[in-house]
Amino acid sequence: MISLPRLYAIIDSSAHRSTQDLLAYADELAAAGCTLLQYRNKSGNSRVMLEQARELKKHLGDSVRLVMNDRADLCLAAEFDGVHLGQEDLSPDSVRAIIGPERWLGVSTHNPEQLCEADLTPADYLAIGPVFPTSSKDKPDPVVGLEGVRRARHLTRKPLVAIGGITRTNAASVIEAGADSVAVISDLLREPRKSAEEFFRILR
Image (cartoon, rainbow, N blue to C red; front, side):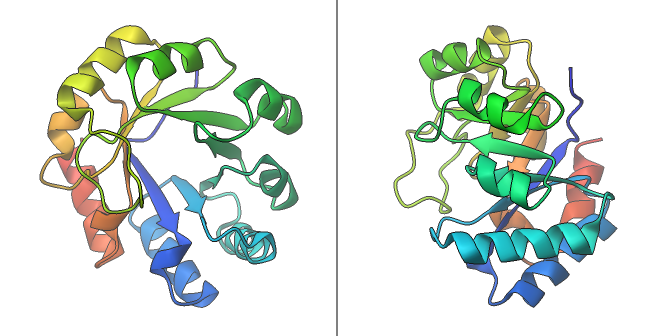
């Protein structure tokens, strides 16, 4: 079974003006001690996604585990370390066949039924959310709250990532509810190194 760091930082390309800006942001997170970064790009431009992903890999090397959001093909092309799937993406079984046994595979779930279904797949870890209201999705799923995290914890033995509206203010309560790791986008954007370091202090 894989071991997740407490902080699962997500780099959303839409929050950065350029690839250089995105790389500088990744540097700050790595300097703070982040060992797992997900690259997320919902623009649909595969060429840009691959270029940015390859730059991230070249820039960070093997110091950080890099996970590609949604796209197994780009994960392989950019030599990333894993893929994270949503409910609308290829099935976990299909993606496992593409990426092989060594790379990490994560699956987002939004209710107990989806979580139980994902638990039966070859996913290495499962995500549950949104735990709190979030601004990073245009059409977010219904909020599950801390009770949703507690329920998810009882339904799987796989590592559990909580996502959605998680900040330094509420992160400890999410871990207490049973999550192994918290996925964060918005609350890392300002002063990323300082913010990530504060998360690690809170989540010790």
